[in-house]
Structure formats: C-alpha cells, structure tokens
Length: 317
Ligand SMILES: NC(=O)c1ccc[n+]([C@@H]2O[C@H](COP(=O)([O-])OP(=O)(O)OC[C@H]3O[C@@H](n4cnc5c(N)ncnc54)[C@H](OP(=O)(O)O)[C@@H]3O)[C@@H](O)[C@H]2O)c1
Image 1 (spheres, rainbow, N blue to C red):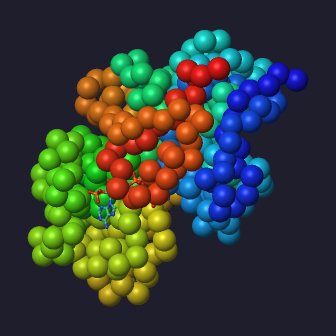
Image 2 (cartoon, rainbow, N blue to C red; image 1 turned 30 degrees about the vertical axis):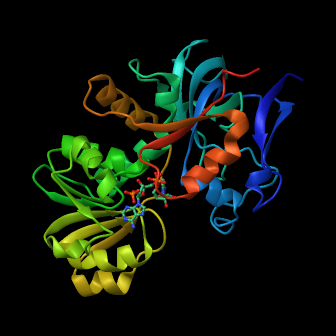
C-alpha cells in the first residue's frame, strides 16, 4: 500500500491534538479522480466538525482527516471519468453528502463532478482558498437569492471567506452591495465592490436602510433575527448558519431560505473564468504548513479572519 501524510483528528473536541500521520493513500473509484493536493483551505466547518457542533447534521466517523477544499494536480483518473489528464491542475471540493472531508492530506479521491481546471492566474495556495467559500457565495447569491442587476443586497460578514466572494459576485451581477464589517475591514470590503459598509460594532445595521431585496446572513442568531426587518416585502434572506426564523419572515412578508453548499464543477468553472478575467480576486490572509493545522483551525475559530486561511500541503516531506 502506498502511504501519504495526512492530518488526523482522533476525537471530537480534540483538534488541538491533531497530528500528521502516515496512512494509506485513497484509491479512486471508477467515477473519481485522485488529486495530489498542493494546498487546502480552512473553513469554519472544519473546526465545527472537530468540535462536534455538527454531529446531528453531518455524522462522521473518527479518526477524521478534515478539509473540504483543495487545489492540486491529477494523479490518477477513474475509468469512467473524462476530460482529466495526469498532471492537470485542478481545484474543487470534497463531498458534502455523507460527509467526506479529507483535503488535509497529500492525496484525496473526489468525484470528477466536484472539480474543475484551476484558475491559471492563481497559485495553488490561492486556488485552494476558492472552492467551498466561493461556491457557497455563488449558490447563496444566485441560486437562493436569485439576485438581479439593480437590486440591493446586504451581505453580513463581507470580510470573511464566503462574504468576500459574495460581495464580488453581487457587484459583478450589477447589484448594489452593502456589507457589514468591523471598521478595520471597511476599506477592504469596499475594495471588493461594496458601495456601503456598516461597522456592525458601532451602530445597528438596521439604521442605514430597510429597502434590501436580499440579505445574505453568514452570522445567524441575533444578526438574523434583526435582518428580516431590513428587507422589502417580498425580499429574501439566505442563511448559511443556524435555522430560519419563520415567524419573523412571515411578520416581515419575506422569504427565509437556507443554503447548504454543494460541489458543482460547472459553477467552479464559471468562477475560475471570472478570476482569470481579473473580475474576482482571492485574498489569502495567512498560510500554514500542514503540520500546523491545529493553529490554522484556531485562527479560523476567532471568527475574524479577513479572506481565507490555507494549508500548504505539498511543500513538506
Ligand atoms: N451552509 C453552508 O453551506 C456554509 C458554507 C460555508 C460557510 N458556512 C458558514 O458561514 C459562516 C461564514 O463562513 P466564512 O467561511 O465566511 O467564515 P469566516 O471567513 O471565518 O468569517 C470571518 C468574518 O466574519 C466577520 N464577522 C464576524 N462577526 C461578525 C458580525 N457579527 N457581523 C459581521 N461580520 C462579522 C469578520 O469580520 P470582522 O473581523 O470585520 O468582524 C470576519 O472577516 C460560518 O458560520 C460558516 O460555518 C456555511
């Protein structure tokens, strides 16, 4: 059996103790691609899974290799796959259905429909920062909110991984974007295309306006509860974390819908084209060596990363 290095979490609540181990390489099924991972990104789902916060929704078995997205090269292609050659640079997501993480490792086997050609203008570290966050943003903005040119959208947490892409996609679609961010991130979020920013720490966001067609709620809780009232009647709130507050949606005459990101090669290819055209940029706040995965998860746990955190997987031996 060929071995690879992987970050292993042995138990719920013990991600601080995760260690690099040598384990067997995954073997791709007929409809899968074996990817040599050059870099993977950290998403809040990684530490939420390790901490056991998602036990009910995403049952997993321990030990776990975390990691939901990556950039790398094709090492082997299952016999039913087409369009992938050995050595091709690709980026994508591991599966979310029947949760299978696994990107914090030198190799990952993924369905061919979960990956696309890596944006040519990005390094692997930058490309790894894209798939899960950008697909969440795409599916929230276009599939759930069905945003159109000229509409007004409020994006909570515009400085984060998902929010940063959501701001850029909404701006590209011709919408007028308002985003919440702390004062230190206001300039950054405006640079991504927000026409207005609200320092959520200094003033209630509902003071600014109440005429949004859509709200992308990446925070939940009290932020969501207060967000229904800033929508026009008939507007839509898309929530990525927590549950829809149906009574509040009904009272405001708006819709509340959840987004649960799904891998989608066609959407990834469109996102890659926007990146290569210089219309969407990727912000890597910090990169960590694979062996420092626990520190990378701790950084994400702060809830105040600007852009994305990535793990460098291929550099070490
Ligand atoms: N449902 C799904 O499929 C799905 C997919 C991806 C992510 N998610 C969830 O969506 C959420 C966001 O994910 P992410 O990857 O974007 O997280 P992230 O990158 O860790 O978000 C960090 C950002 O949140 C901002 N922030 C923190 N508290 C805020 C508040 N009260 N109001 C406004 N901004 C605030 C911070 O900005 P400041 O430093 O300026 O405060 C920071 O830039 C997470 O809960 C994640 O689990 C769900």
